[in-house]
Image (cartoon, rainbow, N blue to C red; front, top):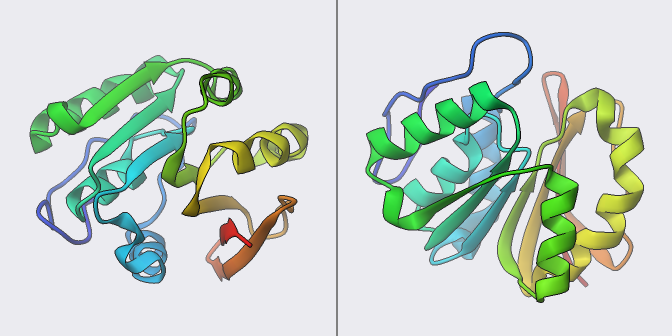
Amino acid sequence: MRIVAGQHRSRRLAVPPGKGVRPTSDRAREAIFSSLGSVVVEARVLDLFAGSGAMGLEALSRGAAHCLFVERDAQALAAIKTNITELGERERATIDKANALTTLKRLVEAGETFDLIVVDPPYEAVPKLAPTLAELLPQVVTPAGRIVLETAAADGFEVPGLVERYNRRIAAARIVILGPA
């Protein structure tokens, strides 16, 4: 796996071993970031269920100001740390070793908002997580921000108050980009 575009283009990324992390493919990341356009530049990014950190690192490579990576798996965290260090992004990256929903609730309580939020939970957990994510995500996205949801192709969920800006199936994944109305 590699960074698709931007200042780190073609740089390889470490991926945690095993089947616990399913990195977003290069093809899917290219489609997502092409659709996002200038939203990424100078953005504050929240990468929930970060896995290898590929999505947040792609955003940093394309000009995002900062990314908060949220992950609780030890092997995934090690890969994120390695990737951040190898790309020289320690100044623009923060890692939160925590449950994504716990962090999301804390961010809502603190009144924090982000210009770009990436949500790529384990596919099998989507039905259980969807109601809480649908409630909390609109509270942490800026008025001009975007939320990228990645689920299994047959799954997905609606987020009240947000408008679908993009919806595409790429291999086994469904990519949906939402923004405030």
